[in-house]
Picture 1 (cartoon, rainbow, N blue to C red):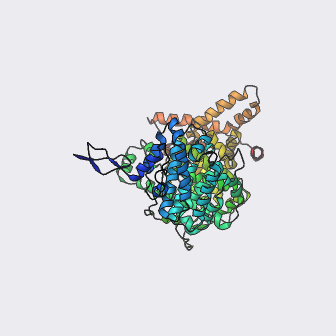
Picture 2 (tube, helix red, strand yellow):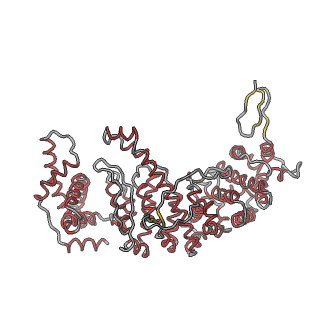
Picture 3 (cartoon, rainbow, N blue to C red):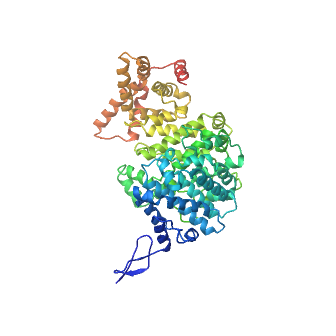
Length: 606
């Protein structure tokens, strides 16, 4: 009875008593992994090899399976394979070029997977021979540069970028990838900029080009002079910077759209009804279901652009229509190794979207607004390390923006207003905002909303202090005395600037709801203030500043507990707590701090 063999490289149906046939390309791979020179008996061996469709799985598995002794035995053949791959990139026959690019991908990945513990010099020696490595890599980079900048087909350019991304990401730590020294010497920076500056090329390859640039910038950035850092910092070509901004904006927009689609999907149907019936029991499950894979590669690219190039700050503020672009399946790309970093670029129809005419009734947006919306999603959930790092990077980017003089002027400009709909975490004590009737305000208001939302939703025992430090430029949360006096300012003088009297009720409600945070802070600073040490004076100031907050808590908590006991209620609703606060708020005796004292405290910290 016949059977189908499914192993890599096996062909045809065979009887169980006969050995399965192998593809010709697999037989040729086997010759390369033999001791003899494969071209010794067949002078046309290399020409024929690159006319064969590459079997990536088989070639990589062969490279990973060789042991130490076999490496020494077949090293000359591996070096020869690498050399002929580079030569094939100069062929006019497109099939040969495609197969050579894919073979190089398999070589880079297979050799690195097998030799994870080996030094970079050993890997270079196995791939191309250390004595010839400089020339081999020079030839490779020149031919890749020629393919990217020339009139090659879009599929070839795509494969070139995939090969470069494969080369850059074969090690977990990019700075340990010694081969990249040759990529530093033989720069492809200009080729990347050419892709970003041309709308057609950018639509096809902009995502890969931006990610590649971000990764190359991070190679040993603190250990030696990285030419990609130097060159990126001085780019002032407007089409190139705009092109980079377009790619970043569309990638972030795609993420926001996916999250919004999931959110809307979960707002209806049986699951939503069941969740409403049982209250907040399934809040954690809803959050998990709404989770969308973050895109650290694009965040890294945005950070490097904002951090290194002051000219890029102007790109953040460029306005354009805000439109939900429908996504259709993108054009399939040639078979290549898995996309690096586990990230997926936005579909080609989004990347190729032409500029649309401005409509006076259409809301405008820009890269900064899109990033703020992205950050409002990412910073909601920081429970796992992956999303924690994404949130940290978002806040670092905001810090870089806040430190720029032009960005600050734009953020605070009263004549430039936007409606920014930030995503808010569902919480037991508040209803989900409808997202309608959002006022048009300067962008600094959206930034502050984001920061305040982060503070409110991350009051936890396992305090993420580094994230609070990351956005100190706006909220100055590195000093508890400032935070407490900020509360005092609202408590004492809020009637002069809070929009409604209900705002006072909301303030008192939040203070009482989070009373344990203030109780813990008071215990800590009281302990420090009663001991001798360098923080004694600072702790004493905080102790004194907590008087008003503790007066509110000590006055309200007994009232709330008494009301609950009398009415036999185990857990009061938000409305019940507010009704109690409305009745007793005027009876609280507060320590009225003068404006001079508060301003002095703020100016000292600022």
